[in-house]
Length: 307
Image 1 (cartoon, rainbow, N blue to C red):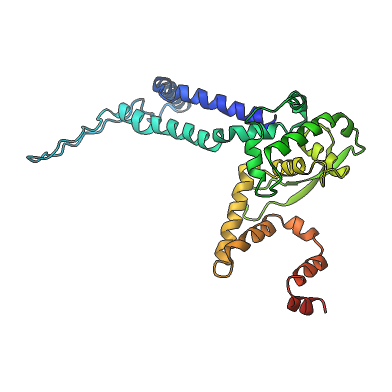
Image 2: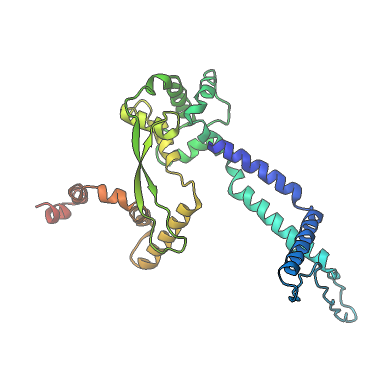
């Protein structure tokens, strides 16, 4: 399932939920059916038990406040328990769910459509745009990439993507049949330690964004020919697809801020975050190269670290 298909399913789910937001009668009927089933099960299991689930909400006595002369009268509160539950609980929950879905997923629909064009399975659709892309195509993706490279304009993205789609059949005849991917090993939900990074062998399908990026990297096409599209693939492949990864990164950010609040400036926070969330990449770096890089910052550091 690609990201655009998942987005369309979320749109359909939101539409269905909106149709159900004020259908309280079905909820009431389902609740009554469940209560009846629960009472029958209780009677069958133990005839001596006097436990019984109430089928109706308890009624509460309404309070009447005395209105003083000249005081404006207030709206009367709802006294019926069922109506009060419908307004204050059912309707608010459904509105919160639909609003949260729209805020978290649906407002980025244009970006999802742009990312879906990077899927090799949709390259046939890309080649049909040879005469010209739709006006809104790849605009949101370009906005996300411009902070990393000022050459990532909409025209450059469209040009490289059309060229890559046309060369796909030639490039996919690469020699590698499998590659190593990095993933997190699932652990207990209440575990306090960070998830362990594991490496797994994956067979090459040559029809997914990961395989397409590896083909470009193998043929050294990321430096010049498809530099901007390569940046787009890196952006796509590094996006967190699960909420767990986002929560883990946010917990790491809070930990860093609490421990180094007095000595860490905002401009160095990003570097500390990268080192904390990508420790496996940090371990692969050569210590001598890091020392040489730091030494180049000033003559004093060069004397202390190298000479």
